[in-house]
Image 1 (tube, rainbow, N blue to C red):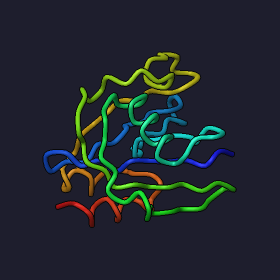
Image 2 (image 1 turned 120 degrees about the vertical axis):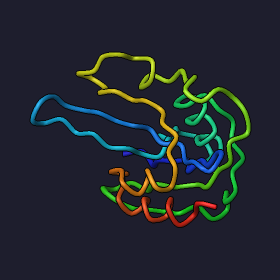
Image 3 (image 1 turned 90 degrees about the vertical axis):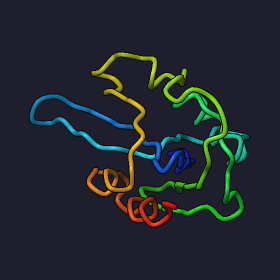
Image 4 (image 1 turned 45 degrees about the vertical axis):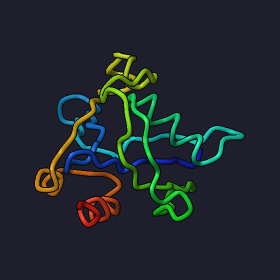
Length: 139
């Protein structure tokens, strides 16, 4: 399984998340994740992070902790979480497969949301370990 990079992006006292829905009826899951994705062969963590954020949400970022990401290891892969600031671009203009492919059975649904600290505290954010990190880092 590929290692994963993700950006905890703050903008205007809100954090940007990907709202996910998968499954149908009784098997339906609704949750939120930090935008990001897999590191491709030959890519640095920074290159992968910038590419994934452009693909998923369509923006450019400033990475605050490139040399010291928050790391979670699970299921045989490492996930690297970076604190970022929004720099430019139109949120929600990503062109990656997961956002432009509307095959719900294959991908579920993805939408970009911006939420306040109070709203984030009430959401199902995965992985669960990252939720406290997000809430504690709000300025």
